[in-house]
Length: 294
Image: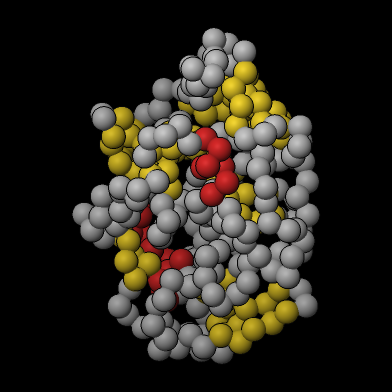
């Protein structure tokens, strides 16, 4: 049987029908002839196995563009997520916290850094006004490998997987817990801007063919950098990883305000081999992460 999202995306799952929508907690195959998407999810032996070409099953912005010189290309990616997640309550930073139901990864932070001659390093947020990252209307862009990925709320994907309730199931985190989006913004994050001025002299941002001098010393945090933000327990509804217990089950929420997609996980997961969290270094570069990992 099949269930349709949009005009050409077909998701197959045993026992599904138009009156009995797909249970994305089970096994399914998602294919889209128009966009070339193919994602196969198999639930077996205590694992959720996701094999995908990571092509989005929805419209995207134009790539390459002025802020992003890369072209979307098919990938060959597989994930093995725990079927029965184990909550630890200890926040651990992760570069790629999860994967959407259509096979597109969530990777909220960037590799872009403003470097100061006085030693400070400031990790640049994807959603800011200082540097054009070429994000499209899905809060996504493309890596040099051709991998399309989400930095925030995946607008078109949310519309496709909307079943009418406020909470839209949009993916799974690396620790196995589900990822949702609240259409009504029912859950507020617990982050706020630091009230301390930044430090750093002779700072600049560089990438091939482009250089930008950035005034850092005694400037006020405005959300441009990861370290502009601090986690304050109890400030909002969500914890440091943008998670919360809903009806007795822990889950993560993608929000329209910082951190958009959580930068850490609260459950057991196989940690990535990518080095330390971004922003490590002198001054404010690691303030936010230190709060999350404490």
